[in-house]
Amino acid sequence: MQQALFDYTLYLADSALILGQRNSAWCGHGPILEQDIAITNITLDLIGQSRSLYQYAAQLKGGDATEDSLAYLRNEREYKNCLLAERPNGDWGQTILRQFLFSCFQRELYTQLTKEKDSTLAAIATKSLKEVNYHCRWSGEWVLRLGDGTAESHTRLATALENLWPYTGELFKGVEYELALGMDPASLYTPWLSAVQSTFEEATLSLAPVASCFMQLGGKTGIHTEELGYILADLQYMQRAYPGCDW
Image 1 (cartoon, rainbow, N blue to C red):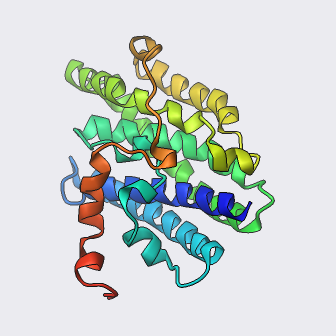
Image 2 (spheres, rainbow, N blue to C red; image 1 turned 120 degrees about the vertical axis):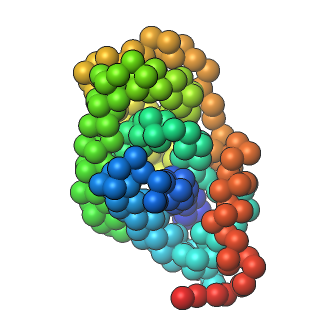
């Protein structure tokens, strides 16, 4: 049970960290200053969530484990982040849609975790949920703006949907450590889909083209796309080049 809790905590931490690292590439490159600052703040929120989770995971692991060793000194196959988090930024529409799909999932997940018997996970979820509600609102407003905007913005968002939707199924497919803890991510699918569809309908974005697509799996058990290797090469460079460095 202790190992399952450790693995599950890493899954939550890794997903937040990797998406935060992806989003960080937009710092200084957002379409307008206000939105550049907004996505940078969301990045900081995600990295803050991952820190709290890594600190808890380090306690569970014991020994000389720290939040830094868990974040910086593991290899690709040891990461358990969902595949959605590591997908390329693409254009602004793809980044926005990736954030929206992930944040809607996080909202359902953290709402469930606030009732978790593990008091530490419940406390982290409660604190993070306030941030995630904002992430959902912000990214959802952009989905509406792009989907129901110009022909160009709608086409870009529809293309992003085709690129990203095959990576959403994994979120609701329970793996061994989740099932060992009595977690059933499948129970989150209906409320998640309802929230997503509601926004998509208003944004005139149809799920029909992706309704029967093949769902990619593996991230939660360490099987990743090649993208993760590039992310970690950037994320981990300083710690691996200068072991033990700090600010």
